[in-house]
Length: 199
Image 1: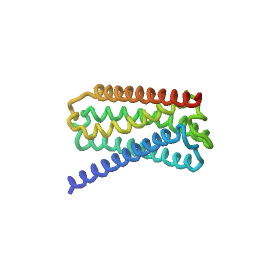
Image 2 (image 1 turned 60 degrees about the vertical axis):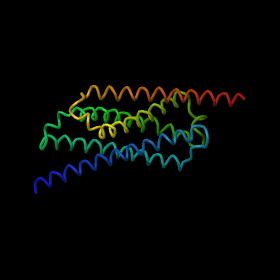
Image 3 (image 1 turned 90 degrees about the vertical axis):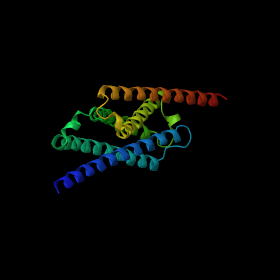
Image 4 (image 1 turned 45 degrees about the vertical axis):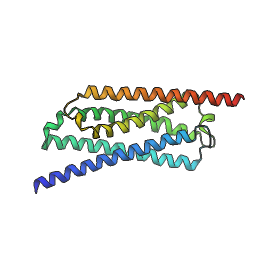
């Protein structure tokens, strides 16, 4: 009976952890798709902004669920399977969640106010290049940082075999490549838009 209770407890923590990842990743993708959709076409409306505000709160809820379930996992490992605390993936994912938390602050303090200010116009005409690049960076960090823990969760072969520094380094490398690609594409689109305006 005790074993069954322990199993149920771990299942509940796992479900909460996966739900947090689903909320966060889904919301992050919606925010990014919005930026792409309204970059230079339709205007941002109050209704669309309110929808995005709801989505950003969903991402925040996912982040809170990740922290709570992550801490519960650590407590569970400490009391029932302390050897899992030596799994470097646990600490690498903690680092990524810290990055997500810092990026989440930027979403609410930088990205959402900028989108709100753009109500009535499209993002291309209402934002400066610096603001657009800042928005692009926040969105890229969000998507990669939400996706990476899912990849780590699936990669069971990394358990107890790879150090947290190697995993964190791989994450930072992927993030750097994604940021470079995102800003390269942004520069190409911006140049194309400027050329169309001149023509």
